[in-house]
Image (cartoon, rainbow, N blue to C red):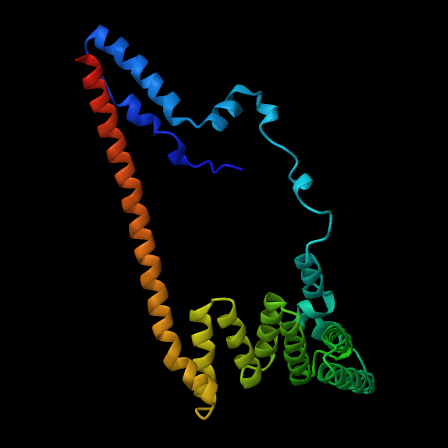
Length: 266
C-alpha cells in the first residue's frame, strides 16, 4: 500500500495565500493552481477520491490470519483477581483461623518447590503455572513468601519472552519487599531489554544502595549514563532534522508555485 502523508500534496493554505489582484491574472493563477494540485496528488490518491466514501476502506481482518494475539493470553495471566490487590486479600483473610493460614502457606510452599523443579528442567510454562497456583493459595499476610513467588514467576515469564508480564511481577515483588535485591536486578535487566534505560538505571542504583558489592549493578551504573546520553542526542538530532526537512519542503514548494505563476503570466 502506498504511503499517504501530509507531504503527498501541497498544503492548502499555500494556494489560498496566493492572491492575484488582476481578474485575468486571477483566472490564470486559478487554472495553474488547479493543474498544480493535479500534479501533486498521486494517481492512487486521485482514484480513491473518485470512488465513493464507502469504498475507501477494506476489512483489515482479511489481511491477517484468524488467530488470537499472544498478548491477550499474557494479559489474562496478569489479571487474576487473587493477585490484584494485596490489601483486599488481607481484608478477606482477616477472619481466617491461623491454622488455616498455616495450612495454605505449606501448600503454597509445595507448589513453589514444584515450580522450582520444573524451572530447572526448562519447563517454563509449567513452572509459571505452579507459581500462579502458589500465589492463589498463599495467604496475603505472608508478604515475603508472596514476594518470592512473584519474583520466581517473573523469571519463568522472562524465559518465555513475556517481558511486560515479568516486569509487572517484579514490581509486585518489590512492592511487597522493597529490599528484595534479586527482584530489583531482574526488573532492571528487563527494563534494559525493553529499552527503558532510565528506569533500568534507577533500579541498578537502588541495588547499589542496598549492596555496593553487586558487580552487575555497578557496571550498569557506569555504562548506562553514556547510553542514555547517546540515545537522547540521537533523538534530538532526528527531531531537528525532521523539522528542517518539513520547513525546506514548504519553502521550496511556495517558491516553485510563485515562479510558475510568473512564467505563465509572461
